[in-house]
Image 1 (cartoon, chains in turn yellow, orange):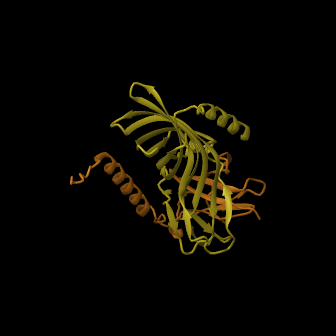
Image 2 (image 1 turned 90 degrees about the vertical axis):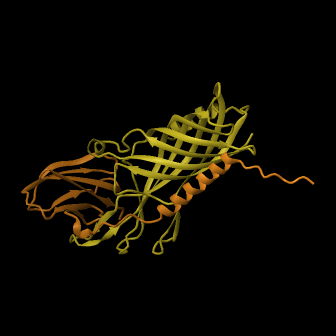
Image 3 (image 1 turned 60 degrees about the horizontal axis):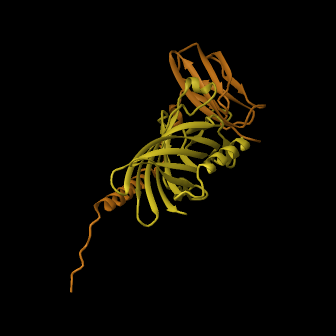
Length: 221
Length: 122
């Protein structure tokens, strides 16, 4: 897995030659929108829970590199590579003791880390603003849920979620604004193409997601 | 002396406005946790949850004599697929299995019920 990721990073790095005219470092805040599972919900930018430790927890964010290069006529290509953390409220879980007595229902957040790669073809609406659509894929690095029992029967525990697909093709749609001060700002919606679940479970259950993100980039060359 | 003329940049203002509205909407709309499901409403239950070595599947409020259980491990692999008599509690052994979230699907009287449980380390 690590070898595969390293190979991919080398391939992506080769797509960003040092002589490129417009290379940006970017950061984003993102919002996971669960589709096909009504009990799941979007996690906010910052969540506060007075009963939790720590009381504040951050939502989704990511970092990466972006390159802009001309494609043909007015159309230009945006290439992205980055690491993304996204977070969502998973399906609430009904905790019970060994006598089937309810201990409470817990809402818990799931955190996914993914490597993301995409190419977006942009058409300029004005001199600085453009809209684009493209294709890409995300490679799941790890998905974890923090299980915390409010009745304190057991302490907090992290469990890995391995029932998600390792590679997910995505379709990004984006509105981009590039200013004259070497900065860019974008609003991006990325739609996962396939059922997120894998294995036998995928035959009986379907989960999908959209990812809404606001990004800012600073030119680095 | 010439007066300074304020140049309005409509597109930039528009995009900044959109970004602020969008961020504000998401910041304040998503701060609530999902509504809690009352445990008493559940027809299908798995206990104990979380578990270390095994969990029992129980269905209440059903008139069916039997039901069909499917259990999936944390990798989405089906580890159990069998009909069960409704009068007895049915146990899912997970002692030698992976730590993580298990999904349980039960077909009873034409209806599919679904729940999940967690196996944690001792």
